[in-house]
Image (cartoon, rainbow, N blue to C red; front, side, top):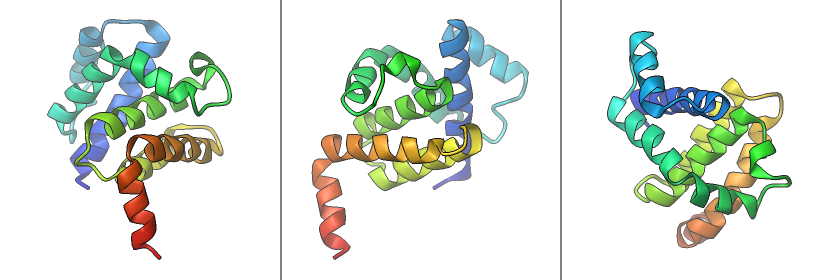
Length: 146
């Protein structure tokens, strides 16, 4: 996994968090990130895809999350919510990305940005989402590891 893509995910979590908390326009947030040089070492095309696409399909993402979370999506900790939304987006729209990569990157982001133990919560939710969205891939992984 390229470091610039990992860095893009880190920036996306921060940008989504800001969007969720302030309701600022995506363009204004992205411009601010550029001006503050927070996109150095970031795969900018991936950052833009995720940051602009996730809000466009947030209702679909939240419907999927709602099946697996223990509370309304809008009351999930905002950092965890941003990470979960990004993970679901990648599981849905980036089939070339192995689901385990999506889970590992999300878990690492939760360890980096989230509260103690939030990585376990993120892992549990995204693992269930992956079993639903990527059923064949998950089954093949399980059978291959026997």
